[in-house]
Picture 1 (spheres, rainbow, N blue to C red):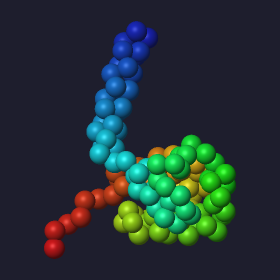
Picture 2 (spheres, rainbow, N blue to C red; picture 1 turned 90 degrees about the horizontal axis):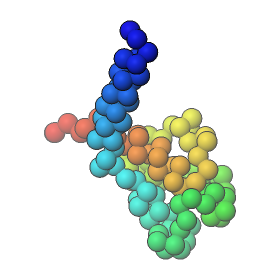
Picture 3 (cartoon, rainbow, N blue to C red; picture 1 turned 135 degrees about the vertical axis):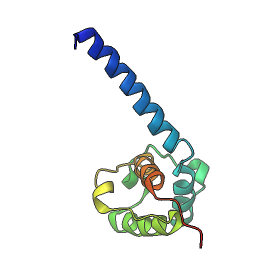
Picture 4 (cartoon, helix red, strand yellow; picture 1 turned 30 degrees about the vertical axis):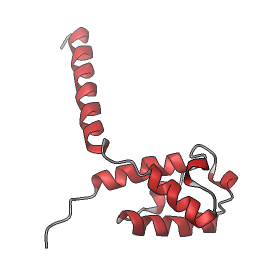
Length: 111
């Protein structure tokens, strides 16, 4: 395949992949839930919490963060693997992880 055709094919593939990913996660936004829970657990108002600040700057230590993750798992109904959050530095980072986990969660089966 000529290079020009490969580039065009790659552009189409990237566009389709991006649209598919966006469609899956478009309705998933866990950041407001995270901010609400953080305000409840650590004090403050959800609207005043800086989601881009480092977690430790928000006054959340490692034990507090772990407890927060357990509460978040209960609230969202998904397991949050430790490996998935080992590089999380901000609540925005955490929302990115949890958005993906919630989007990947299989739909509930009717009882």
